[in-house]
Picture 1 (cartoon, rainbow, N blue to C red):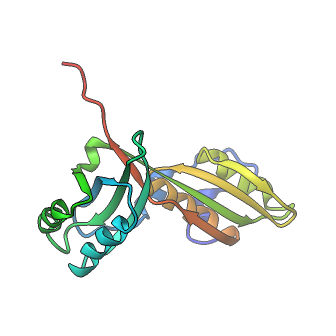
Picture 2 (picture 1 turned 90 degrees about the horizontal axis):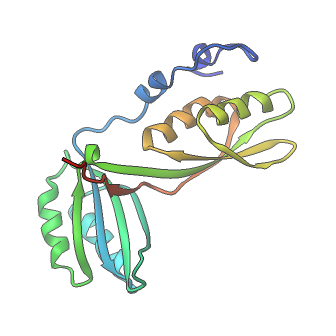
Picture 3 (picture 1 turned 45 degrees about the horizontal axis):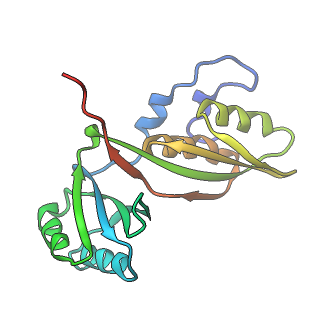
Length: 192
């Protein structure tokens, strides 16, 4: 059953599932994780120019999500990357020079709400289906497709939650996984 077999317990038991242990087993970043949100003009080629700027400076973009805003003339890009390998300031200055970039924010992870959507197609026969569905429930996932040999589960949450679910479900037989990449927004200001 993989490295989390001891955490999972026997089928049908009421053992407590320790999500913190699974989250601790997630990816390790070498420094401050940057969440950049950019408001850009909704025009062809803007994504290529932004991605090219990062590529030319040796940055690896961890995730990239692009979508419409309330203004059809603008799109929002959300990029996550590890800023320890290269200073991020130089790239943000270059991004400001791109004509199609309207606004850039480097969100502090503690001051942002970030979520990602992932779809997992997991091998599940009549013997394992109950366990797979139990894990989906623990992670507040939604079963969106069921066949004789597999279950497709939708999980929404933080990057750590998605990775923890992947770790716990992989021993059953992960057939396919699709992740959107994180989207983020700054937290609301508290009333003082």
